[in-house]
Image (tube, rainbow, N blue to C red; front, side):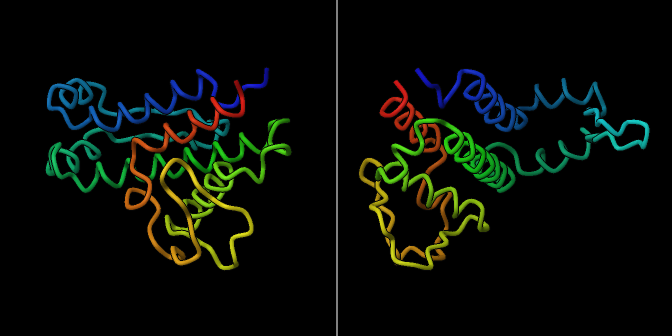
Length: 172
């Protein structure tokens, strides 16, 4: 049976979400400060192209806002979810099953969500919707063009649930 939402993908998404959230806790910040920087190696290391994250600078911005009502946390979750949905659309399109399900309402829903995520987090519906785009009680219609996707229409917790539903319906 073909797999869409693999355990590795789910684990990576959960780690991104958890990591984004726990950076708001003072004890985690204190532990992170001991490292000073985080270096992510590039294949162009000989050109000094490694990504070096200055932990103190990142934490200073987070520390000012704290955990509740944080604009940085809101922005981070929006960006993580946008990137994740765009990537998962590409994963879905490479499956053998995609050609059989491409016009299904949940798949069309994900397609419009993905397009909105890729167009500055705003729905980009310039033409009449050919196939219904619906998931659970949410429906995408032409009049939504230009309106925000995440978190206004699709909440953070809906992202995984949408992909989980698609996986269970079409891949299990």
